[in-house]
Length: 319
Image (cartoon, rainbow, N blue to C red; front, side, top):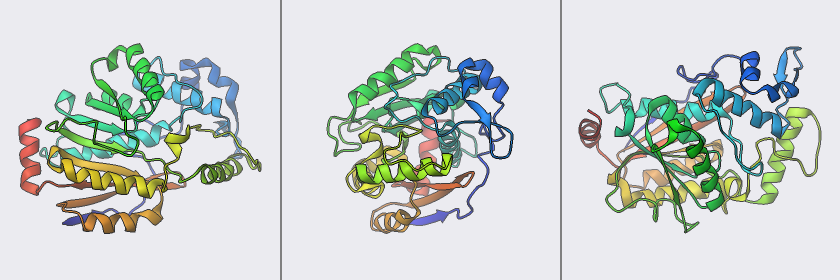
């Protein structure tokens, strides 16, 4: 097994990310006029969004999708996780670069590429960005049927997404890939933003810390500015256990997927994940560092295909 680890934490977003520079608030307000009600001066004196307010965060993301990605209708229940658009886009841009490595440096686009989003959620955010940026096909799976209903409604409401995204229900909450992919079904990429916390208590503690950082206020029962229901935020054993289960299941379909990938938010989990992958029959492991502002995270990617098999994969499916 070969391993590539990019240890440099990027303080700026991916070069192709549409939100690398400061938000153009006037353009965003023009896209979603209600956003104007949630603009206030920052500590530095410049206009900014009230990021401690869940409504403000949702409106900002609606405006970003409308202005930069052409998505006019994007809504879902307030109880569901509201994802930060720039960070989600960064994940997909790095994945496009990863696929290009097996396509003579050219990013494969169009319906030749199929990506599985594990835990697509009610917002359907990864497929939306992947379709509008690269015209990829997506399979979005989730354990929550209501989240899938919401995702499907978003797909049906935006013509550019129709026939590009397939929603599939995971009936077994203990499974990742089993029950979602057919036995001989091939995908080019799997992506995942795993549940972060191991318990409701841990989730509330994290929320209190985030609210204090954003607003300076201490709250015993804070409202999450990015919201999120239990299955989106909480998994028994937390992020680490979810990823461990994913790695174990990936062995059974190893030759049917070019790259398995996942976000790893907690640095403390990385070495333990490496140890399991080192015991798994994979050919290559990559770690791609990401950074937005003061926050750093990373994508861990692994493949069960040899260098020759990966090259043949690209030639057969994309060229």
